Length: 242
Image (tube, rainbow, N blue to C red; front, top):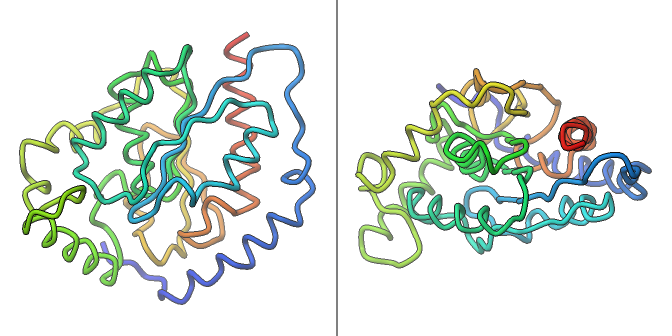
């Protein structure tokens, strides 16, 4: 599945960021009232990114009253199977079901956590995540993936290798991306047809509510429309916790 949008379309990140910073709902978000608990949130960054890439989203969530836990990822390029196991321990650290939000590759981990541990996940949100085919990416990104895999083949610690594609280490991870989510699980996939990094068709998760936005792939975590959709999920999860 080829990526149709040109790579320069990702420059839209900057006007998306400017639009978010000018949005009053971002600067002064409405805090939930006393009715219902405010679920905690786990954030997972995208490929080759770290927790710092989700700083603005984390600050907005905290201003809304959510306890936010970061993934502990500095550069998201590790073996998916091992990374999923580590994230399961992070999820176990919550005292109640958490909302799990992931961008790009981080969203595939979020979905895998929701499929494997539905009792621990109040809702899952995937931002431009190619759950149907994690390698449905642009040629330039695919070259980066292969370069990282070669480094892993040479023994560089902390990165995936060529064996991860079909090896036993990641078998469960790939299966969880296709597994149906539990009935009643709140699941949101946000995608863009003009995504220049990921083929949007790989994001259409049959177990999720899929919402199209006009924006870049890298800007998913700073797109004002995404925040409007997140508000709906957060309020729904809070109401369910009453």
